[in-house]
Image (cartoon, rainbow, N blue to C red; front, side, top):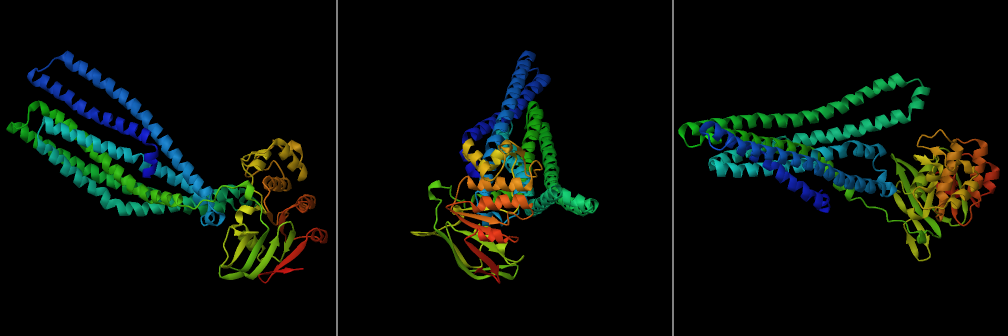
Amino acid sequence: MKRYFLKHKWICCQYLFFIILNALVPILSAQWITMVTAYALDQKGGVEQISIYLILICIYTLIIYLAYGKVKQKYKEEIMTEIEQEIYSSILLQHSSDFHQNEPSEYSSFFLNELKIVEESYLMQIPSLISACVQMILVGIYVVVTVQWWVLIYFIISSVLLMQIPKIMSKKIHFSTKKFTDEAGRITMFLKEAFHGFDTLFGNHVQYQYVEQTKKEFFRYEKSHQKLNWLMDVADSLSNGFGLFFQFGLLLLLGIGVVQGTIQNDCFLAVTSISSSFMNGVFVATAAFSKIQAAIPIVDRIKIFQQNTLIPKNDNNENSIDAIQLEHIDCILNGKKILDNLSYRFEKGKKYLIIGESGSGKTTLFNLLNGKIHSSHGSIKAIVKDGDIPLYKYITTINQKPFSFQGTCSSNICMGREVSQNKIKELLEYVHLPLSLLNQKISEESNSISGGELQRVAIARGLIDTRSFLLCDEICANLDKNSAHIIENAICDLDGIGVLFIAHHYTDELRKRFDVVLELKDGRLIEE
C-alpha cells in the first residue's frame, strides 16, 4: 500500500498539511479558555481582545474544516481509483487458468465488500492515526510550555497503555475479518445465482424453498459482519473506558496541584479542555489501529493480486502459427482420467470436426486448448518454423453459450477495439445478420435478440481479429435448425485458418464439409 501513498504524494502532503492545521484547533481553543479564565479570576486582558481572538479562531476553524474536507475527498478519490483500476487489471489480465482458480463471484465480492473495508478501515484510518498522533504531540508541547512536564509524562503513560488494547484484540479481529470476507463472498454468489436463475426458480415453482434456503446464508453473513463490528466496538469501548479513568485521574491531580499552588488557577480549565483533546486523540488512534488491524488481511490479499502474472499485450503482427501439437496428454479430473496419452497435430488451414459421446471429454479438450485448465501430463504447443511458443495468443474461442455485455450489437462485436463501420457491416453480412441490428441494445441477460443471433454476434466478434485457429465448443447446441445451418456455413466458409469444431449432434452433410473428422473415444482422438 505504501506505493499508492508515494505515487499520490502531492495530495498526501496536502492532507498531512491540513491535518497539522486541524490539530492546532484544540491548542488555540485552550489558549482562548486560558484568556477567559484569567479575565474571570483576575480581570486580566479585555473583553474586546478576547472577542477578537474568538472570532479569529472561528474563522480559522471554519476555513480549515472546509478545506480539510475537500482534500480528504480528493485523497480518497485518487487513491481508491488507483487501487480499483489496478486490482481490476490484475484480475482481468490473468491467464485463463489463473483466473478460474477463483469463482467469478469471489472477484465481484472483493470489489463490492472487501475494497470498501479497505477504504473505510485502512485508507481513511491511516490519516486518522497520523492526525491523532500530531494532535497528541502538539498538546504535549503545549502542556510542557504552559503547565508542567509531569502532565506530558502522564499523557504518554496513559496513551501507551491504551494502545495495548487494539494489539490485544488484533488476533480475534483478524480472524473475524477473514470469516466476514468469506461469508460476503458466499452471499454474493447466492444473490447472483438467485437473480440470474430467476426463470429457473420460477419455472420449477421453488421460489419459496430457495428463499428459505437462503435465509441461512443471510444469517451467517450478518452474524460474521456483526461479530466483526462487535469486536471493534469492544476495543473502542475498552479504550474509552480506560481513557475516561485516566482523564478523571488527571483532573484529580490538577485539582490537587491548584490547591497546593503548583499549578496556576487560570490554567486549570484550559488543561482540562486540552486533556479531553489529548484523550480524544488517543481514542481516535486506538480506534484507527483496531480498524487497520481488521483491514490487514484484505490488504494482504491486494498484495497477492498485485503479484499476478499478467498476459502480454497482443501484438497483431504475431498472430500466425503453423500447427497445434498435443503430446501424450493425460487429464485427470475428480479422480477420473478423461484424456489418456492423447497425441495429435492440428494443422493451420484445415477444418476439424471433433465428435464424441456425452462425457467423452470434448469440453475437457476444449478447456485444455483454450488454457482454462492444465493437463496432468504431457504438453500442448503452438508450432512455428523456429520452434514452439505459448498457444493462447493464437486461438480465438467461441463458447456454447455466448456472453453478451451491456451496450449495442456493434459494441459487443468490437469489444473496445478500433474497427471501421464497413468492417462491422461486412461481418454482419457474413454471419447473415441484418444491418438494422447494428445499434440494437443488448445486455448480459438479453431478450432483445434470439440465441441464434447472439451466437452469430459471437462469431463476428471472434473474426474481428483473426487468429491462426478458431476453437468452437458445441456452438450450435440448443439452436433451431435454420440458425444452426447459418452458423455452420459461416464457420465452414472461413479460409486460411484452422478450425476445431466440437459437436455432439451433426449431420452427414456437415461431416463432408470438414477436412478431418475426429472421434474422441476412451480418452484419445481417432481419425475417421
